[in-house]
Every structure is written in structure tokens, then in C-alpha cells.
Length: 410
Ligand code: ADP
Image: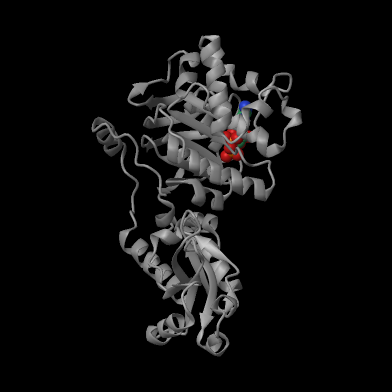
């Protein structure tokens, strides 16, 4: 993974933040108070029109609040010069919002130019950012937005939001306009980026699954941005505060929970192994002595190669490498339990090898280990669910201690 020596996140406090649009009978956002910790990803989720975007846009004062205060790392930014605020707060929106008459590089350079960076520094930064968001600088630097796919435009949008290395990144339905597969990739990329950058991210979506995937905490908002629940995805899935939140969580909370956990974080089974170079008698002895129905043959690099079962014992003579069943699929330790479940359900024998970074064998998952893991997770959620979000005072105390970020779940 690349090392980046950038600014990491800042805490955000909203105090009775309110927006009344002229002529509207009700405020669009009515006295929202919440504390967001440095380095965490908080997702606002709620029905269309409930005030998510308005709340978000007040944080960088694209929309001016009509009441309340905003503090970033303790500094009251409610009345500071908005240009100064742009250094602290990056902003990415749906459809990337790139300027069509500017090249990719010019789009990314907007904020650094606005705040007076020199040419050389801007040039270096643009290269660095393109690389960071997975676009080859040589190929994309001089392109115009119309020459890029939706997903590529969105990456440029994120690069532009990060250009001046702000501690806070606001994202307003950034992946709302791309197809589901690209969207999934962009979400994975954002998780990767955040693991490197530790920004404070506030992300707006109406898609609860997206909120679960990305959020360290989720604020479920109802009309006028009233907070229905503000908690970890685990707590919201297992202990929704009321019917409104349950309605948003939707069916299948236990299944959604599977998306929150990686294979490497649960107990997996170990299957006896041999290498395909081992002589047949070693293989047979191993299987007989193992007490299991099958063992796994590994290739020269320790990667799963063939499953070898008791039924294969008669066929082993002389050529163990050709006996048994080829390993058709495996899951990486980074895969979610949902991916693992999918793999186990589609495997003819209902078990799948787990592999490490270089494809090497690290264990096996089957239905039983998965079910045990999920039961344990749900039980732990029930016991440990935090009923109430931390109060603003706790967030302030956190900041005083110089908290540099809760770090996201891996
Ligand atoms: P969401 O992001 O949750 O869909 P918004 O924050 O966009 O909700 O809108 C909240 C409410 O404020 C809606 O009733 C919307 O019509 C109103 N609204 C949003 N922007 C403006 C505006 N510029 N002028 C007047 N009303 C607005």
C-alpha cells in the first residue's frame, strides 16, 4: 500500500444547526446537533427531502445556516471566510460535477489554485492524486471529462475533493449515478483510500446498504434532519431505535450483518494438507490419520490445488496430483462473510478454501463455521450494542485527548 503523508481527519460538531429556506413554512433542517469524531466515516441516510444534503452543505457553508454553529477541530467556522473553509473541507457530489471545458488536471487543480499554491506544487499534487484514485496520470491528465466513463469521472471528483488535502471530506450521493458494479468498486476504493488517509468523511446516501458498507457510524435522519438514530451499523441492525429506523433497515438485517465482517476476522476451520509432491503413501497416511473425509493437496507455492477424499483413495496410485477434485474457487481473507456464504452455497461440496495475500492456503470455511460465526456476531452485537450515541461533551473530551481518529473497521 502507498504511504501518504497527508493531513488526517478533524472532528466536527454541529450545534442546533438550522436552515430555513426563504418562503418555506417549515425549516428544511431543524436544530441538528451531532458530534463526528476525527477520522471516522459518518453516513447520513434518510428518505428523499429529509434534509441530508442541506445539512451536509451547511458544513462547508455552500448553504448558509440560519441558526446554530459548526465547529471543526474545535474552531468555530460558522462565520469564517468560505474560501478558508475550502482548505479544511473537500466536497464531492453525484456525477462528479466536473467542469466540462477543463481537463482532468485543471479540474483537480481548482482548489489548490484558488488558495494560491505554486505551479510546481499543484502539478506534483495532481499526479499524486490521480495515482491515489487509481487513474494513470499519463493517460488521464489531459483528458476532458466527456472522454471518461462515469466511474472514472467519479474518481476524478474524489481526487478534486482531496486536492488541498483537507481533513474533512463531504460526499453527497457521490456514487448515485453509476451502475451497481462500478458503484461497488468505487465503494471498495473509498474504503481503501480511507484506510490510508484517515479523513473525517461525511457521506450522504438514501441507500441503507451503502451506509452499512461505508459507515463507521450511521445517522438515520427523518424529516427536517431530526436524528432517529446515530450509531454503529452493527447496533442499528440489531437494535433499531424505532419503527422508522426498522423500516429503513428493511428486511434481512442478519444477512446484511454478513457484509460487515471479513473472513479473516472469524474463526475458520483447518483442513489437513499435503503437497502434491508428497508420495502417495504419505497422502494416504495423512488422510487415514486425520479423522476427516478429505484433505487438501497444495501446489509448490502452498496454494490450494486439489481436494482429496477417502473415495479418491483407490485412484491415487502413482499419480496423486491427478486424483481428487480440482479446487474450483477460493475466498480471500479480505472477503466479506457474505462473499464466503455465496461461495460455500455454490460449491458442490459446501466448503471453500481461504487464501492469503499470495493465494496461499490459510484455512477452510464451510456452512457450519459460517453459521457459528454469524451466531456469535449477532449475540455479541446484542450484548454490546450502544443504546445512545456519544454526547457532544464526549466528542470534545476525545478531541482534547488529541484523538487522531477512531480508525474505520477493517
Ligand atoms: P435530501 O438531501 O434529504 O433529499 P434536501 O436537503 O435536498 O433533502 O432538501 C430538504 C428540504 O429542503 C426539501 O423539502 C427541499 O425541497 C428543500 N430545499 C432544498 N434546497 C432548497 C433550496 N435551494 N431552496 C428552497 N428549498 C430547498
